[in-house]
Length: 413
Image (tube, rainbow, N blue to C red; front, top):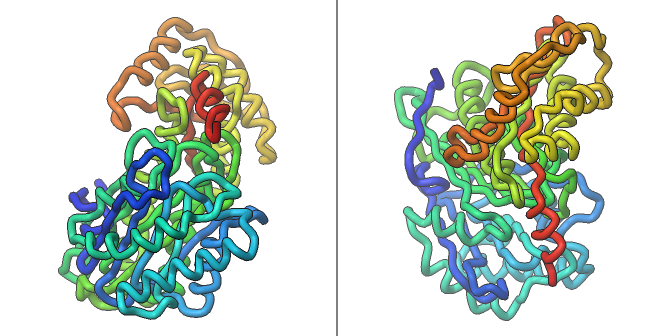
């Protein structure tokens, strides 16, 4: 049993946070496009960002801010323009965005972090942003998480939100999160944005370590299409407003908090994978028998990211040979004679030997997942064992449908 429970409220579930989301005219569609998360007090801040050498201005801005001082009061996110590959003017636009918000909130620009999402190569529509920020600040609410979650999405079909609560030092502690992502999703930060809030007090170094490990076990373990983006950002705030004793060292309380942080990130990551452009089901790959967790995750991510595996799942074809081939090319050595593959409850390969199985029933299992309730029973489980090692790893992805090509062929036209 998990040592926490789900609560409502998203990023405003923890104490001391407000959020807002408005329509400011950044998106041609006229949908909400500007989001804000604010902590009532200065919060410890950490982040994990894209590994791409082509980065959005907001990514460099946040890295510089967090290196200078690991704290923040606000996260501003615009949707519609990625502000990536926009040159010096894009950098100036990012800096002006922070200055405009700082003036409206009456805080230092150094306490503001930025995120952007949208079309690469397009600058933020600054006129719309300038007029939108006062309205955004005026809309801040302790129940504004859903509005913020709706204002950060682009091709997403649904918003992504979660909040969990546990007890530390006999007091309730909460972690909430919202995220966006649907296409251009792949490990090495997966192309997504995610914002996490927490009301525990944690030392900056420990909070960053927790977030990095949580990212590896969640956002860095999902894939939709193999494309990493320019804007990937995971930002987490911890403001201490739960009034629990500060967590400064590794121990029972830090492990409890990190486990809940990981659970929040994994929920959001799976929601992103399930919402993959054109997807009909979530795919979870579990790998056991590896010598270390990194190796297990590498095999799991390779299988989840295989276009052939993903296409077979969309075609409801239990073609386990594609799973075996993906595992074999993952760059992790193992003995073929030890390989075991299962699709749901169907054992397809044992000790490297193919087994007879009910192909029609296995196909029906795939069809049932695609027809089941969203993020409930709509998961196709692939289980792979490669030997006698102690380590396990997971990755999440989705099937590859005709609609993925259609959506991306028409993205800017």
